[in-house]
Length: 253
Image (cartoon, rainbow, N blue to C red; front, top):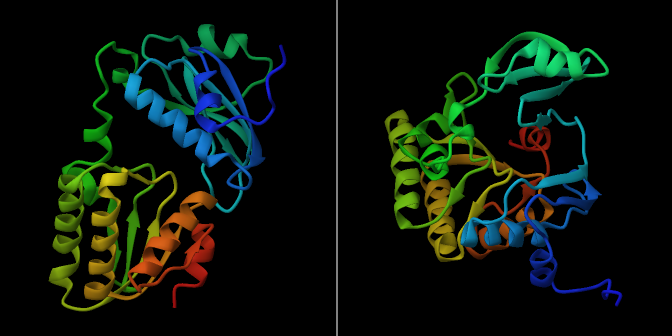
């Protein structure tokens, strides 16, 4: 019996099995089925059962974006001269287990060892890695241009404790400056849980009203641009969200 070609996103995600290859439409951030990917993430977080998936979509280098190809043996980066092998899994012989099996020769220049925790059975502790006291590592200030850069790419805000950590880190960086600054914020692959959304956006309003001369925010996700823009407009602060870091930089002042 043929399946209906148009089904609810929850039904589509329920069809995906462990080890499947999932191909989606779109090119980069344009036309990508954001709701499907969000639902897939929620299913994984709720059950922890979906593993070894391969996601195939059209994308490539452009606007300074980093493109990585991650395998169980190594990691490649796409550069202007082609693929460069930048990381090797622990215990893997570079020549015998990788290069000898490839039909072409990638660029190789002192690759690092991949994170060993990726290959251990215990949980990675990604929450602590992505949002912990090292949130301060995501913030930097260029005093010459009076500009603060906030790299929130890949970050997920889950609750009030996460919001408080972000506030403390921002206050610690900006309060001592004693003046207002310009800011560029990267929201690529950023997410907030529904229960934390209002609190996080109220924090965004607080930071803009207290510290900014101007701010540019950006993300390649059309869904996230709409979501952030809507919430920012509600709070009567700068609501335009750009598609790329270059656009954000060009339109900062």
